[in-house]
Every structure is written in structure tokens, then in C-alpha cells.
Image 1 (cartoon, rainbow, N blue to C red):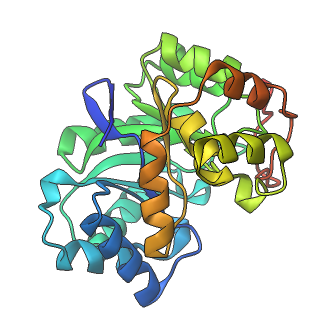
Image 2: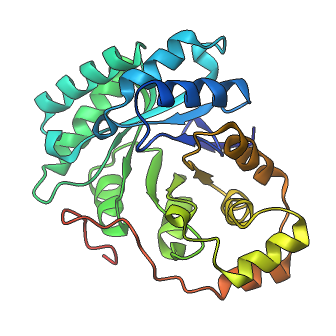
Length: 273
């Protein structure tokens, strides 16, 4: 598995996203992914499936030390005492003594960012999280976290796919040595109808989804966590690591509309800030 190194963290480029997975289906998907070579599993407090992920971690033959496990604290729980309760519950549900990466899932509209990041640092110091980071942070909030508060964050997880430009955010992250994890890397299933992607897929003998993943995974410092419950989908996503796009492919992808964001709830920050 290809690895990103960021502030001492070793993050497998391709992970398994588990949003909207639940129960035995989630456990089966995680177990299958680990059997097929995945070593990066992504979950969150809000997904309400940490128990199912934990069941897979308890059942797999893959050593815990070989698995990169990410979970996230929900935006309503960013006061330090609430974060502690969230972490304690996540570890209990996941049946592990630590997570590899613990993220603020969304910035809360009126959060005390310094206090929240301070609690993340305490988790790292206590060994409850090997590394800490954020999710859905635009550049302005990243700058506050890294430059003003000087929090040792290793990753920003954001929506990123061939239809959404993240050039400026990527440039800032790279300048600061951060990994970027792309969620919704397949634009929530919207990529099958793009003629440009279909032409590239036909040229490489693959699917449009594999083209979109290959484009992301080829970028320095970028990981991707597509949801994949079926064995066929998991294997297809793994195969995307071996697809090499050429300059013509990248030019065709660059020409696609790049302003389509599909995840922007009411609490979302100002994306262009």
C-alpha cells in the first residue's frame, strides 16, 4: 500500500470509508477490506458504526499495529470535557486503546478552537491518539490552527474529487507538511455520466470510478477513502492504485467543471475563507 508521511504519521493512501454503513454489513465490509489488503479504516462518532468497526478489528487476523484507524469527534462535542467523553466512548466502541488519527469532524460555528485543539494535543500526549487533525477546515481555519495556535495537526479531511477544485487548500497543506484525505472521492456516485471520464476509462480498460480515484491517488500528499461495501468494489478501488494517467488524461480532467461541492450543511464554514 502506498503511504503518505506527514508529521510522523504514516497514512495509507487508500482507505475504506464507512459513512452510512451499519451493523453486520459494516463489520463484514471492514473485515473483507482488511483481508484484501486495506490498512486504513475511517469512521466517526457521528456515523454510529464505531461498534461495528470495532467488531471487525476484534475479529481480524491483521495486527492492530498494522491498521491505521481514524475516527472523529462531532462538532457539538468540542468543549474539552465533551471531547473526553467522546474519545472514551469511541475507544470503547472500537475495542482499542488508541486511534491512529483523531479529527475534529466539523468546525463548530462558535467553538473555542484553541481549547478544542488543546484537548486534541492532550489526547496525543496521553497516547489515546497517535496523531491529531481536522476535517472540513478551509485555509483560514487551518492558518489559525497551525500558525496562531501552533497545533501539531497532521491531516485535514475534506471533500475532494474531479468536480471540486482544492488547489489552494492543497498548496497550503503541502507547505505545512499536512496530509489531505479526500472524502466523497467519487462525488457520491455522480461520475458515471461524464463522457471525458468514460473516454479515459475506455483507454485504460477500467471504470470511470477508477479513473477518478487514480487521479486523486497520484497526487502528492492526498489519500482517499471511498465507501465500498462489496468485495468487487473494494478490489476495483485497490486496482486504481496501479492505473497511471497521462498528460492528455489529466488535461481532460482539468477541463471538467470544478465548482461542484456536494457536502455543505448549515454549519459549514466559509469555504473560500
